[in-house]
Length: 251
Image (cartoon, rainbow, N blue to C red; front, side, top):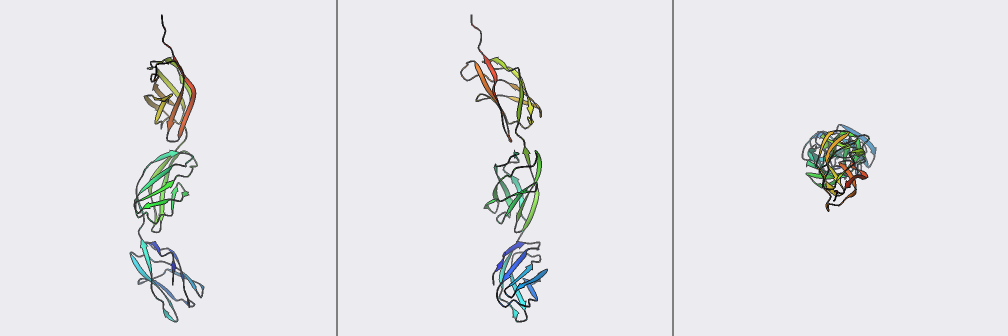
């Protein structure tokens, strides 16, 4: 007499399908000493029942006019607990993989990001990995994990839009670096890095539309145009040849 699923929330409410023989006239389905909260006779070989609350492993039995069936084990699973996310922010378009850490995660079937669900990969009872789905808009959303034991909320993930660069002023300076420039654009308040060519530049976030940056020197001391990149968790903005290094004068 198989049952499906053979595990469910300790709070009850799991719809269980019992398959067997001579199930007509089922009058009771017991989970341990407790009766199912609802029973539906599907056919002479199948009955559905909603599990009551419980804990640990219990025997499921079916009672008909012919007597009680053989017992089949059912396992109660506690609600999951999430302790942390490996990354709490990422691109609005999603596609990045993050890890959810906690307990009771071995039966995880879905992870919801603000109502948009994704299917996780179970690593262990304390860890699952999931590819973040695309967000509807930039901002914070709640993260919930659903397992056989129920659904747990409590963590948040922030979708971040890709930055843009509108102006770089001034847009030229000596190859030795040191020029203080202002970069304007959008989504700059979550900036992780600013580079001139491949060289990182020190910067200060003024607000979502403004960065204060000190231009680094060129690696070889040479003059010429340089790409400027601004990167945040949502992506990278490129100003091709956005800054020009000037050669020092000679006499």
